[in-house]
Length: 334
Length: 249
Image 1: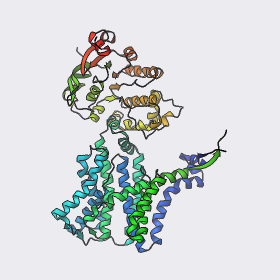
Image 2: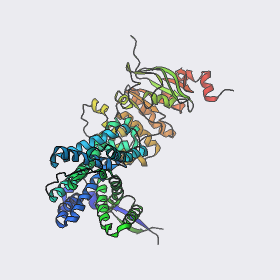
Image 3: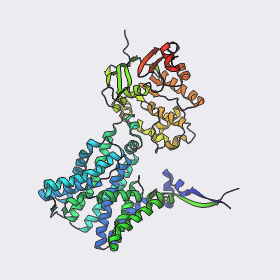
Image 4: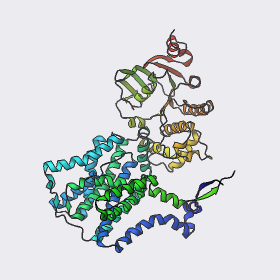
């Protein structure tokens, strides 16, 4: 007897659409739990972890922000291979403000986010017309160029970097600040991308001439997307400057460019929640594998390959589908 | 009293490297007129449209719209002035449902300006516009992802996106190509309705029979040059046009 797999929407999904959701607790929970669950985990998990894993969580959030930033750009049709540009720019902005002018971290963080986003946008302004791989290559090169500029001109401490930054008052403030920003960015930008503004951004990705043909200046929208994504990345960098109390050339390292992309791809490209989920998996995994020593990167790479082959749509899209639908085997009639 | 033409093209030229795609083309277009542009493949019809809508920069010549030179404006500003076009190769947003495709033109500054910044429920307006071009309201077609739609619907969607901009001049680039006779027959009334609303239309077509039924005037192009200009019955009688289409002996 032949069988085939049937995919059916859960009845509760239909009942939870629109105003009907408030009819029962079950339906309200069904709708709201995917939103509340991550917030709840972010709030409680730090309380259960030791100091080492608390630091790992900071990394998770930072890479989560970088992955969100990457995904916003990717959804606008700009594939960035240089998230390190945003990260490093934010890190140096915060570092300079704190080191030379003694400005408090609570002011440098938002200022560096805006300034880092703005400077990165200005740097990428001349190449906004480039599409696809050409744009990507420029983003890959820019952070590497900036490292050499710092090395050659010896500005901002040169190869030594700047140290002695003011740390945030406590680990709890660090954790809850960065996770607050991460959840705000996740839900806020997710909403933004479903608005008409976000639709235009997705339209640019899909078909930029068609957007121009609607009387919309695509470059203005690309600039806005770049600034938003740049600021998110810059905030992550500025935050790490205050956590490490140091800023130097490593902030432009390739790690900050590659890992966010891996996170977004594993989690599910095209969704900010996927990008965050990817970071929540890859960063701790990298820490766990630390014990293996030299072969760490091999295992890490193998994991990535297996994951991408097994769930090419990304973990988030897979989980979302499973949540809203169920599958069953049915017999094929002859 | 002389009426100023809506669109004046004078000595418009474009060359790509050594190829002269459009050469010294001039014509006027009056308000409410339906102009057909025909010519063999590669005669520069689409380039002419690209030059007017400024998707391609002219090498020389002028485009004057409502008395204002527009050939140096960027493409999006030309749309805002009221010139909408469709593409020969349809350009929908493939990942979005058909009706969401309409939101982007409805979001455009031109539409916002016309309705004073408020548009109410854009989804409802989008569905209305789609119904106008033949997306049956009761069917699910308007909610389907554009990538899954057949060519006929994509062409209609392209037309609806242009209409959504409330343009004064609509340029339709081979709207009928790739459509069945029945589909063409169902789109012709939409174009006639646009004319009744006073819209000026330029149609580039290979489907001459259908075009001649609705066009006021025909321009024939060959090797980038305008070789004839006049009512459809007259232009096809000219020797040069016959040669362009049928070849010389």
